[in-house]
Image (cartoon, rainbow, N blue to C red; front, side, top):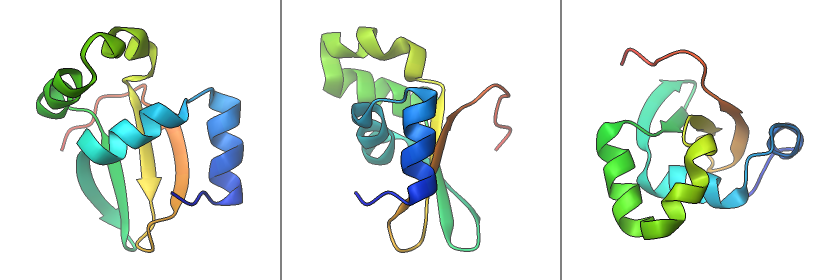
Length: 89
């Protein structure tokens, strides 16, 4: 996946492993957030699917399971961050 300059900075600053970004995009819940962008995050269902796939490795990722990523319509990672508030969607 291609990262914008902003996304590359944020991922590094926030200590989000590339593996978590891949898992979010492949197993996370997708929500359209406007202007052709999509936000991926883990909800209960997607978290169960990801844990089934990752097996014991999922235990090592617990501190990053509250992350989300924003992907542009062109498939470029725009930003990534940790969620502090619950999503009400």
